[in-house]
Length: 336
Ligand SMILES: *Cc1c(COP(=O)(O)O)cnc(C)c1O
Image (cartoon, rainbow, N blue to C red; front, side, top):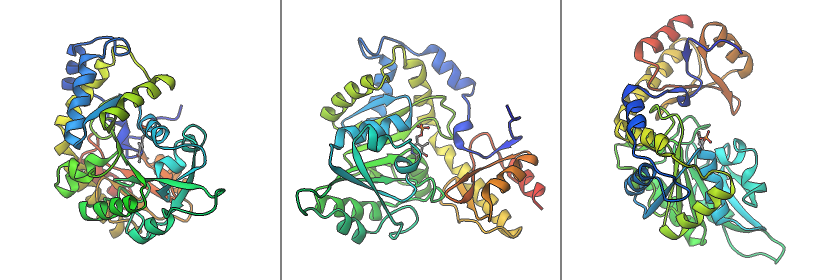
């Protein structure tokens, strides 16, 4: 295995539990979730449902499983779903949206702003009708923040307009909110303002906040009951999962700290720009840099002890809890 980068900006998923989190995991009340519903998982599910403004929620081992369960709830054979280009459900989940959830994907341009389609595009692409052999477009899948658009935030007004356009066409709406917490912190609004009107929402507990495992799918009680069955079908029913859910509860309490990551991302972006790089203006904790050969740039960075990845034809840097301001300064110094 290659040595780990000294300063790891590959992803905010590299954060590990601190002592407080480990203690909470160690002390969590536990039960067999498949048989009885583990009390700590139940507590996390209720808490997240509440924070997101939904009736119910379900702990899932990963964001990908949360997304595919949502899509399995919503889609049938012959259906098409819409998602912004470079969405995680399109390119980063091995096509499960198609072969497991049975939806034909349609990628939409980011013509409404970074990471999102315009209202007109949703109206046009979501329009019903056509001959019997046409696909039925039944679902709009949005992503906030949009990862491969550079952690781009969709604010409450744009979100409301997109949901309204979807509903005009009787489309269901799924929100991949893997980094919804970042969006809420960046906008200084409660997360529930960014989920209004969605039929299902997935959030991750394991990004930037130290939880080792876990995402949550939120919806109405009926859908969550069905989602529990689908999770079991996929092999995602766990037993004493409260040990993991406890980490999610601690993560929720430390949400405000994401603002530090956002500030560090801005320092990194400004510094890179001063050094001649072309970079995105980060809304949150992700900086995308242009490169004629992103993989080669990632290799060069790795040789300097800096971890980055190549996504969507760019070099991606992600700030997180385990990278402080001093580390960002070190990175910039290395690149001077
Ligand atoms: C990380 C991420 C997910 C979920 O990833 P898992 O590794 O399956 O937990 C989903 N959507 C987006 C946009 C993500 O960045």
